[in-house]
Length: 469
Image 1 (cartoon, helix red, strand yellow):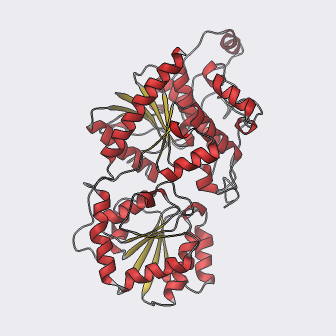
Image 2 (cartoon, rainbow, N blue to C red):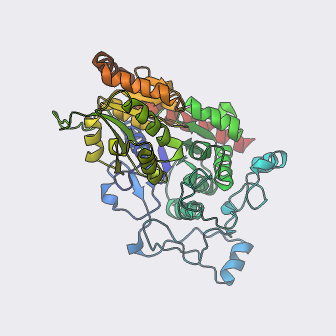
Image 3 (tube, helix red, strand yellow):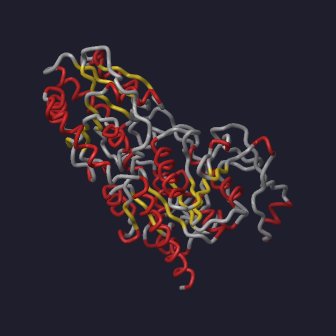
């Protein structure tokens, strides 16, 4: 089977939790004999693509051409001087020559809504696009998302990401039009427009992979346009893959996706990845409690700081390490200072590679206090690095881990009690370390890949049936 995979991140080019998931899954698919064609939104050195065929914009070879369709509309646009060629001017944003961030394209696949969606939109106004029309690929005016509006809905984004998703869709159609593949696999909302477009052009089935939703990122203060894109992607897809039963429930309850259309595929971990060097240890006598992740509303950093204060009332020789970056970082530094524990809470900024391994090797306890976590790969990484884990019950990974301590994210008193228990009682810590590895035995990327292959097969069969109906 040949899979066209669409993603915004892929190591070693762009490092992030979603990229790690894409990398692990594609490696497992490759081991099972499936071919993966991956399209990234920015120019990269393809010599590092290893097990996949990688496509990306290449400004050194001149512009690529969008597929032309000989229609009256396209002829009229050509006569008016419309140039479908594009070029790239920077790595972060693909810019198309003569094309605005959002526009009504002369190409039918960018304007025509699926007929089933037209009927659904008539019955459910929430499925209407921002322009007031049915949900298709026709985009409204570009909507830059403001920076620094934490917890205001979409405030954790920066730049014109909606426009970027629109441009990426054109890039995908341009790069993949002559490629052979059996199914399209799109990861998260930024690639859903591209998945819809290339599925329409190629006639191949679409599988969308939900790693996170707008409700996870923004609570109830959602960005309506991003919600619309997510909902459209889920409804137009032949199958939906959710990273947990928790995420599946959000897809069903918040996006009205039929439960029978959703496959739950838990993330995995590569147990053969390199460990920290043996004997690595901290120089201080302090115990280390670790938070690792984006410092955003979704990850619950304020609950970690609140729990830290309660812990320090009982144990003095503890340092709390906040590793990551995000729109709430400055606020968390100020919060720690206001609570009088500023000297006990260390902010490292964004970490990657060896630095992540080093911080895990130093940790006596890892805490994941997420408010809404579709999965939570960092918990698997902590266990993999032999660190006891305390995690939020409001996370997908809590469904599959048993040898961890679980707490409601808002219950900072209980969170503090569990941290104190791990730090004060070596037998508890040793038990969590020893038995945690048991949970990882079946949480592998090979297992995830097997389930995805089944989802691909089901999507292909259902797509054929729908075309014959």
